[in-house]
Each structure stands twice: as structure tokens, then as C-alpha cells.
Length: 115
Image 1 (cartoon, rainbow, N blue to C red):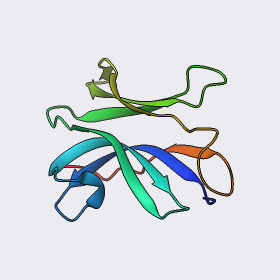
Image 2 (cartoon, one colour):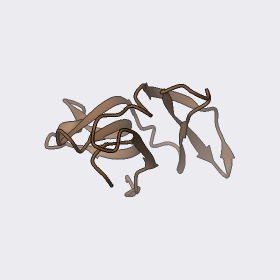
Image 3 (cartoon, rainbow, N blue to C red):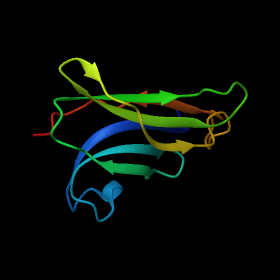
């Protein structure tokens, strides 16, 4: 996906071998930055996942034109009803990200069911 940054919101089941989880273990919602230039994945923010909800909505938003900031949010969904959005964190280099492409790509990571 180029030689820049990829910013993503994802759900992961942290175990001690996942370096992007730090010392956290168990299921988490994360905002991550994958920097291809330096070969690093950095967790910008993470919250424990509440397993009492059958679904989750992940969102990236860029609400201010001309701003380099993108925000990550998540909401739990119960019986088709979306709960309130929870702020997860932000990333401030959307248009000036490092790498040869000079911008940051955004996306939602493929989900693996978390039991």
C-alpha cells in the first residue's frame, strides 16, 4: 500500500506476543499507525473490548477541511441499535505522513471474531 503510513481502527485479541498491545492482554479496540518507511506499527490508542455486545461499529472521521487530524471512534451495536460513539484517539499527520507518498492512507482492518 505504498511507502507511507496506514492509519486503522481494529479489534484484536491481545496476547503477550503482540507487540502493538504493549502489556495489555485480552480483546481490545485499537487505533494504529503502520509506518512502512521505518517498518513499525504504533498503537496510538486502545480500549478494552466489552464482550457483552454482539457487534461493534468502527469509524474514522476527518471532520475539519484542511486539517491533518483524523479521529478514531467505536460504538457497540445491540439488536441492530447503535450505541453512542466512544472516542478512541487521533492521528495528526494525515496529509503529511512520512514516506515517499507524502500522505497517510486510512482504513478499517479486517475483523477476526473475538469469542
